[in-house]
Length: 419
Image (cartoon, rainbow, N blue to C red; front, side):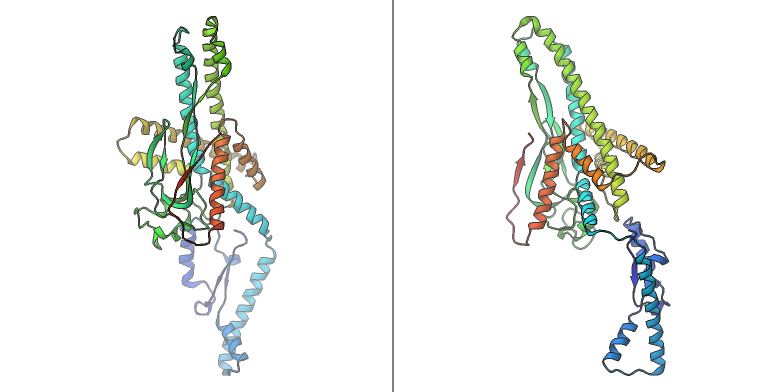
């Protein structure tokens, strides 16, 4: 932002001031939450007549003494303004093209993680509830049950994704809630524009400014297909598809062969359920902490403000459920889960902001953000889910890069499985 300046042309008519351009420019920056100050050191006013005068003289056009004096003054003003701009630019620290590219890559990666983070934290909440229910069921067993072997099996939900062949513009507000393996997730089967190859749109980010260029927006801010604002749309090439799996402990099943050991085995399973819930809670807390640090990184390094954080997505989902009116028990549970995640997220953001302002912490660097992303990928319980989501976004970027504008066949979907 510090390296951006504004140059105003045709400034002679406004006495070498920004004139009427200043107000709409200021409003544009405010509307888009762009943090660029409009002050003397960032604004430079030139006039085109000086260049026209030079070109005309070079082509043999004669001017009266009065016109020449007037145009020479315009030239002097333009020259002085250019010298002022160069003096300002000389003291600005230059930005490395490689560093800018690295920053953009990191920013694109973490903004594309906001929706997977929301989905994965929701799956974690479901798993904690599953383990609590499993523990309660185990406590009611005597060990004499004929089907004990089948009942000593722990169910867990894994976050998975289904990928489409091509990028698409979807409306988050139009997405349907569907239940997959006992978990409610958002269904993006209906696309407002499929395929959509806007190459400057960050995947999985709601309300990205470049979505205004999508065919569906028809050159404006409102979708011609669904009638919602571009702020409620995003680019995606995949959708969440959680699945329920059984985690067997072979040693438990082996020990059940001894009738005298049955109650001991049940108690061990109770401890395993408690331990599993604790581990999910630990990962939940860490994901929230990392998402807060991502938010601070984006806030510091983004010129344009858009719905790029976990908090923004959670607010959208909460509003959608609140506006729905009558909710099923499943949706009430989802709403409660989203509110709890938002509360924890905002609390963590506040704590981290205060630590930064007091000098007790610093906003993460590119390399540190990279380390946090690697930490997410290596989480024992949900790391594989983050890997799948990141790989899906990378494949989407690759699609943008390789697309040559040739006709594409209708979109098909394919499943990418977790391990």
